[in-house]
Image (cartoon, rainbow, N blue to C red; front, side, top):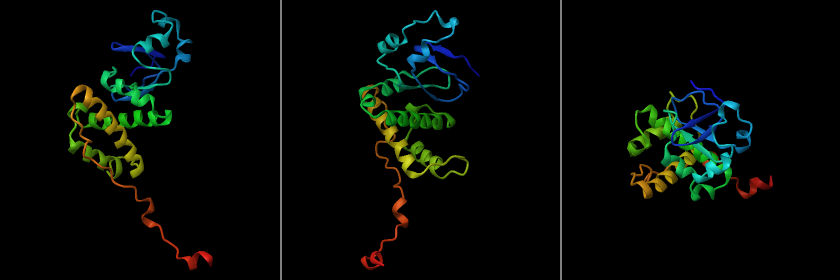
Length: 192
């Protein structure tokens, strides 16, 4: 358990915020304004977090993931800071970061890292996310489709740069059944 107002990781710049459970993947975001009000014990870190973070190609407000070992995964965070993600709306970038975190934690619970994932894990992820009674927070098909879109985008991006196999390549999420219960009215019923 770690609960400092800021911490450093060997592979990157200081992280502002509080880390309460380092046994899973966590989403964080850079907040340059908060860094200016850092505690005195952190004065040995650069005062200009913006320049330091910028040297890594990252920016204020950007989300990033910290792994269960308390360290970032360079490839995961390079995706989140990539032009592909910078061109997305802020809400989409946020949703993708959280969806990727859910996927990474699912794999962690299975004892796998994201480079080892196969189509079987994708199918198991679908079951867990949508219908597994052991999942206390199942989601609708539309939310799961967003998770899949985030993972597909991540694996396409990382696969081109690091030769990682994309377990989502041929996968299509189940369609939302929102319209399944729609009853159509005939023209006479509309005028009644």
